[in-house]
Amino acid sequence: LKKSLQNLFKLPSFGSQNILNHSRKMANIHTVLKTNYKQETECQHSSIYLGMGCFWGVERLFWNLDPKIIHTTSVGYSGGDDNKIKEVTYEYVCTGKSGHVEVVKVDYKKDENWENPANLAKIVKAFWENHDPTQVDRQGNDRGTQYRSVIFCTEENQLEFAKKSKELMQIEIDQNPRYFAGSKITTEISMFKNYYYGEEYHQQYLDKNPWGYCNLKGNGVTCPMPNRPKN
Image (cartoon, rainbow, N blue to C red):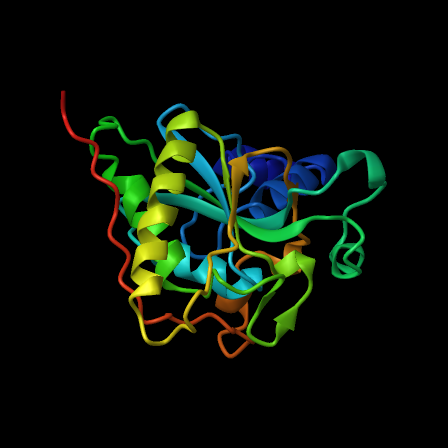
């Protein structure tokens, strides 16, 4: 009867392996952006890794940033020493022994004009303005090396831009009464080294749990972006 119905309606026959493969594919689909967040970065996109404290709120910040720019986001662990780690898990990262940071990987529309990298600028501006980059190994009540402020770049142009933006942010902090005199940015800015995807339940956590914990908030500082003068 099943075979007759399949022939009649031309239905595909789904074996257990096909169902498993389909299930795995769907497991990697971003619950908000509907993109594959585990797919390798495509040529029309760039990737950058950002640590601003607990990655739940950070990921929501960037998936909501601009649908014309943001292709996909995911949460994971980055920046630790691979030689010391057998298995990267949330529990192990929380011990502080891994050296990893909770980060969000942001895949965004590649900037074609490095004289004015508008897409990168929008992301970096949101980074600086939505956490306290002067805190050491913490954000608010979240304490530990895994909560330190970081920007890990995949392109030299990103690195140059991020470092210049840090200088401009420091000037704004020096002039802002919210900060104690002499507060210095502690954000680590370096080239990308490694990335391990976080567990499935961490991905798009605040979409799955809208009332979940989020310590992320604005810092009251408006950060200007670097301008590269034309020759």
